Length: 508
Image (cartoon, rainbow, N blue to C red):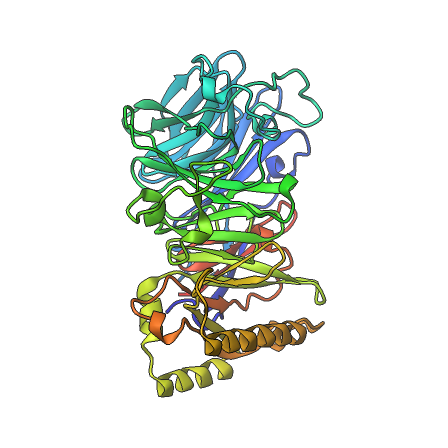
């Protein structure tokens, strides 16, 4: 139960190499992080007269049991071109994508030390977003050189233009804005094979997106999107196998706090193995939906029931397979197998409160099976440790006004009076906790209600154990910007800034 008391077992600093001129260079550059399993990588492409890309890496697992308190980001490679995006790839090293105007995308595979292994060119009119990894393959969203499919014509996607790999804010003014980002391009960095898959549309409405997708199986992708001419976010799941005639599954969120600011984002993953959950970060006002991958794969039956537009599956109709919750997620990988790193803002103390939500259903069942005496003993241990854990099996969803909609007895069912009274008590307690939690203290221990809470489904709905989670409040003191956090299987990372070191909080 690695996360359950919320207190790190060890904290180490992540530091930059000293006096590296390329880290101090102030000119135009591109830079980003890649986190996979226990490896972290920072890359920086410098647009000099002779462009180059410098790469820094560290392994937090091998550094775990060393006696030094600092993990150094070692400069491992320098490439003689300016990459547009770069990711760690298992059993290869890393892969870059370089965009060349009037030519297309160049994929290159390198070993961990930067040794060139192989490359592949693919013609395209434009490319967007980031590289996404599955095994030894990388995928990128592009506008192919094929004629625009009829169902992609006149799709209003206002932001995709700014996600082009060759877009430079304030400098790029002549790029066409009528291109359709209609293709997923995949390259196998081991075999060198290249393949393309068209992103599906539906006949009743146009789907727009911001090139954020991920694999949920060896041949299926989920894409965060929205209805181009209607209000609502859509999570699309479809096959990338050529010739596969299987219909895409599209799950629809109709309500949003600001219809003009729907997020087309997914919670990034940090593991090389596929996760059993998908995090859809769709609401600009801090709501996310966690899906079982089985629902998106079609292993759990679902039916299109929407009317305007038609052909979509309404997310809230699947309370045992998807949950809409009121949290924010970081800008970096926030999903590690069954764990999701989330936060809320404590406005009074002007700091984030950080949680791990563990959707391990085996763990959940084990905690649900604890007898009252065992729960009391565990609660005492958590209070002594200044820890806070919440075991949640009650099914509900959070709407745009932060109101809780009961999913145990959804309309038109009538909830028993004792259940309605129970919900009234829960909501009152939550309001009281919010008033007590928000203080100006510097210590996280003083700001949190301590101990154990079980938020359970009605007795008659507890078998089989509902799709729930274990919420642990993390005690990672000193974190002021939760957007820079990332999660791995055993640790939470506070990724460094160029002028500031980072940290690793180990929980193993």
